[in-house]
Length: 219
Image (cartoon, rainbow, N blue to C red; front, side, top):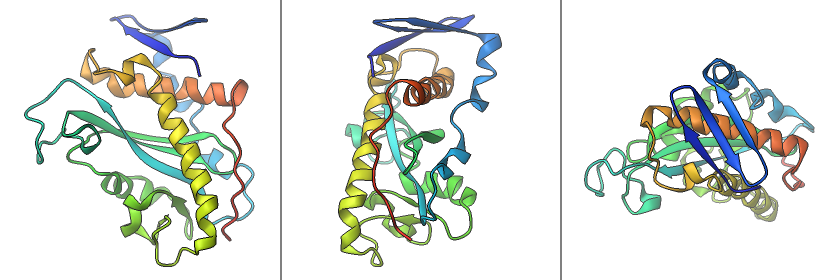
């Protein structure tokens, strides 16, 4: 995915890349939260698996708010205590689509499990779980991860492929200049910028650069 940057002014968000630019006016921006990132797409290609999507939390730097110490609401352990906002991202396992975004949350106050339990936990269909890393091991009723006691060792290679692809999504978000650097615009726009970038990424997945497919069978 091409590296890109974002400029913000009072009238529009302007996305710039080496090959093109996209201008979203205030009128069009209000439409975007309901487009493209579709939770129901987690069921695409469903073969009856227990887990339909993978999830992970990812952090993005913001200007420093207080000392970079444990207990600071914005202190991210991923950035050695520096201030960050955290988002939860979900990818459909068999379809390879970006299907869930949740946030932002202050990284020091909300770990990945707390964010999951706040919203997505309640959106899952009965009997369904999500695939995630070992940071979610305490949520075995809703999350499947390699260190779950009930997880069969034969699953680990399959799970590794799912997690590697999810990391690719995280990397794509951070290929955007506005998210890879310390955010220097109005902090109240951060969630909006993140969501529009998510939509552009999903459009790219659908129309130009699909994520690699994984073989996953857990039923």
